[in-house]
Length: 219
Image: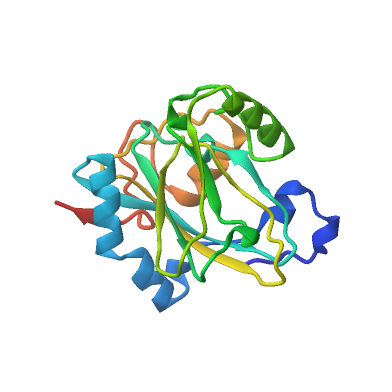
């Protein structure tokens, strides 16, 4: 579980963005029911145009009241996965007005290569924002009603604004990958960490079928 004890104003930009909890499906029956939802997994399968999906991992994101921005980034920088057949479901657990810092993204930005090598932080916020300014990709930022879900591909650049309210913005995310996804040689230390943490026992060049990467839907 999350063990952050540093005061909000003493953290760096990434630390101010949110608190994180991972693989709650292994800790809580209600989280498991959400993560194993066949309805959500089927949507992910259809969006990626694959025969089925596995779980990469789930991730709860709690942006505290007064919390800072989530810098521009692409999730797949962190993942040692062979293809781009990945998608994340972003599920707010309360109505999320603009002042609470909902997800925002650059529609179509998965086509951009520049910026993919950046970890999330001040540098990614500055460089990716500058790059996106000279594109025609639509910047999408809208409030979320309770029950609404957004899906984004692993290479789509996205961010979130600061939480200007006194209330915590609670979000659950589920990261899906192609059922037949192969592990690739890690390209950075973050991918080495993810291999060891979220794909335990998987071997480079083989399907990631560890006990914590179950198939969630297949046709």
